[in-house]
Image 1 (cartoon, rainbow, N blue to C red):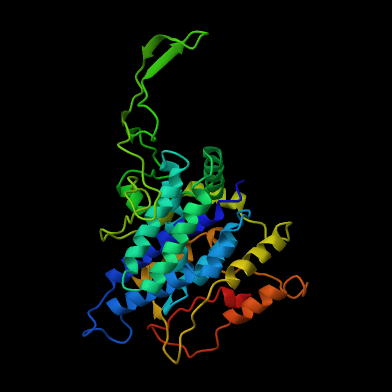
Image 2 (cartoon, one colour):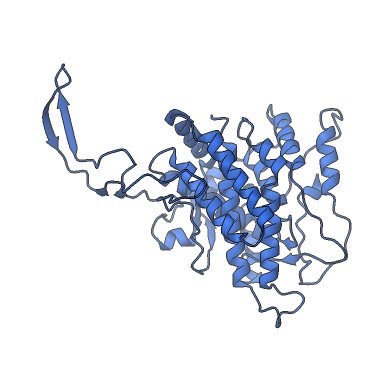
Length: 389
């Protein structure tokens, strides 16, 4: 397991989250002069993205994130993304948050699988950061935060050997193992089978620095080529035109990690039967385990660096539905297998006061004071995961 995997996982999943939220917010946009108080406008969309990106790329948070550390459980990371998604006026209920996380994880899993070289996962990350910069062109201070992270990526990963990138890729694939959630975009594009597994292509550019397959060279003991044999590889491969740029700005060449939601189309997720069976076998044990203390420390460090902006005044949060209708959202919440949901993470922070002092302080900062119920409007369905701590 590589101790350099966490920043790449966090940034790429965060980029996918922003793509999805941007697409859904645009789909629900109402012109400002026609919008009711409980409807989204373009100003609201920009505000939500600015708040989330500003929190995501907080300097102290990034410094903590880039420290060498083991990758932690899906539940621990899910908690961080839940807080990140609610760092603005937007509110998601449990079913929409589950769908959001499913789309994020399956998209990045697909990108990791299709990377021509292990090092190309860095180009995927730069593609996400480039798109994020486009969201915040009107906010120079937030843009500077993202560019600082790009520089940090180059500094930390630019000189890593190929073997380390191979270890990073292996660590990512282990993290995504047994996740086979069907996504409508992938199914329609025929890059995912009905069982949730991806279809790997047998065509396109080969990795940079390699040759198109189809030729076997034989050498004698002196290293001289003495014979060549051609074979049929069954694909349609071409030589890579050039290597993608790892600079702050440049042509990444690789398209993995760009915004696949730029064309407006509905996206659905479905848990395959195979995934349900696998999930029942790999359900994370809720009993204490040796990593529990480390995960608490991990959450305490990460969340301690995140500056969550609390809504000022009586203004409620906007409710965002990632489903086509409220009825679909309610049905998804009822039919989702319990083992695949991350509704509440129970952390006993009182048994060892000294060990959990920092986490208790942070949880106190996350407390949300009681607010009146808002009926089917911007303040609806406040997700209370961290309130359960």
